[in-house]
Length: 255
Image 1 (cartoon, rainbow, N blue to C red):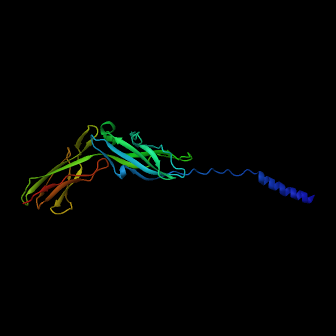
Image 2: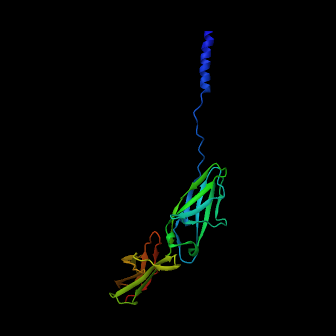
Image 3: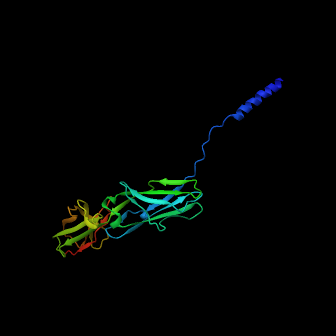
């Protein structure tokens, strides 16, 4: 009896252990979708003038063991509520390149007349939503890549008089303008620092002579002494809303 009782006690302890509720275990996390090689407009700022339509693309590679659904949502937005949608004709798709990866691409046509105002020249975000083919994983992001939309800039130069005697004074004029999407014209970019540069005849290097600030209409004007045959140009470094630009070269014959 004692043996049975002892056995019963042991058996009871095992039974209690067996009936104990196991600790809750979290379900395994879904495999994450990975995005790589993200590019907007090939890695360059998107620059738009006043009339011509600009078409740019957003591309990236998406990876998952079950691969990616072909239909992805790719849009671009800016602060203040601006939004652009991609071209609906095959411009927003992911295509398999292997058993686990897909190349995704969205194409955006931008018409300055219909689509843009000056406030749109700012930093934009790239929003993406996509799913794995087994629908076990999804990817949603309000910004996989930031990029800039800019107003096309233009720059001119003219050095006079030509030809000129050595040691005499040259007057170098020009104008810095940029696209105005509100008026669909080019307007002077005012109070901007612009470098006057010189390239001596036979050289390929440009050297900065001085920095000139554009006036209230975007015009540029300064004077220099004529020293030797060579070319002058203006060079603008750009801003967050306006791309860098160089004028053409104006060759001066110094006699």
